[in-house]
Amino acid sequence: MNSATSHLPSSTSHKLPDWLDPAPWLNRTFSASDIECALGAESPDEETLAALLSPAAADFLEPMAARAQALTRRHFGRTVQLYVPLYLSSWCSGGCAYCGFASDRNTDRHALAFDAVSKELDAIKSMGFEEVLLLTGERSSKADLDYLRECVGLAARRFHNVAIEVFPMAEEEYRSLAEAGCTGVTIYQETYHPETYDRMHRWGPKKDFFQRLEAPERALSGGLRFAGIGALLGLADPRYDMLALYRHARHLQKTHWQSGLTISFPRIRNEAGGFIAPHPVDEKLLAQILFAFRICLPDVPLVLSTRESAAFRDGMAGLGCNKMSIASKTTVGGYGDEGSEEGQFDVSDDRGLDEFCAMLRSKKLEPVFKNWDEVYR
Ligand code: SF4
Image 1 (cartoon, protein in one colour):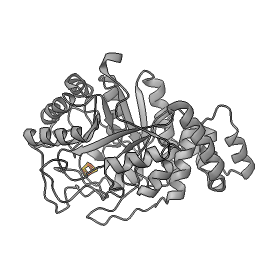
Image 2: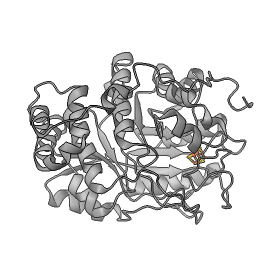
Image 3: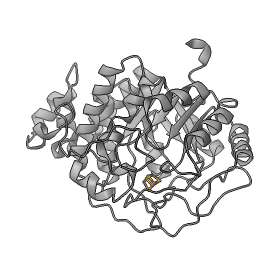
Image 4: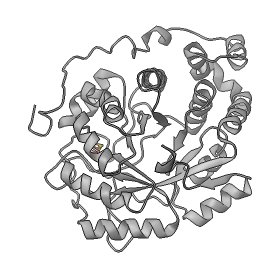
């Protein structure tokens, strides 16, 4: 254990806890009549999800889309909530095989100074956003807890929702960020398959599977209002990862029922190191996954980022997903004056905010920038 993680619980076990292990479903074969039953289920459960994720359900995309759209309308109306990411730092000691910021990548490293952070936040605010997601790599001397707390404070003076997608922390560290104005955390497990996780995370603090797995619970116990979870599609068998993701979501709903939860479906994108996804997920399967989750977790916001193409996102808006990023940069900075050239990965949907909102309105969907205020607490 290195000094950056010495205050966090750690484990070297490769065995999934029973509450997370999706193995019971993996050898089950589903027929067309099983899919019809799943689509008609009054209270969709884990068996419903396993059926809707199965190869047999690929022939039922249209009825799945119709049910997903009806549930999205019932729980979220015609709204699509918008947010934007701001990369604060590309310094990272991590060795994630799929990431352009990994420490063996020959890339220029930057961390925004506080005055540059303020300028970036002002630029984002002037675009109309009310929710910002602040990102860093692993904890480093350039971007540690003190740096992050200062950046959260700068953002909280301007935005109603300030979420972070950074390094896992201890509960008391999350609490100090909540006190600075942080409202949520996004932390993807990347893959729930322990052996694949071990192979993909070659070195660095992120190598500890369980320290990362338990981070959303520590964040919610530390006072953050919502947690965003997900798996990076393409690293392992997508059905395995999606079933485990569902179990993780249900676990958080039980243990932190008073907190908010969002689920994202990032797919591996091109990055400077040329990583090739060992289990590629095409758009058809991604759509099936989104519909299956909407049907089985009807009131959980489902997120789709600009990793996906404009055409796919246009099709999914309001159908399965109801929260989207737009106008995103994956470089450090880039909204105001400063910006580095190499990003963490390539963005696919590079439209501006106005163009994206016009598309939503043309589909009779309503872009939403703010859905919560401290005064409601
Ligand atoms: S995914 Fe995060 S932790 Fe891993 S190398 Fe990239 S920035 Fe670092």
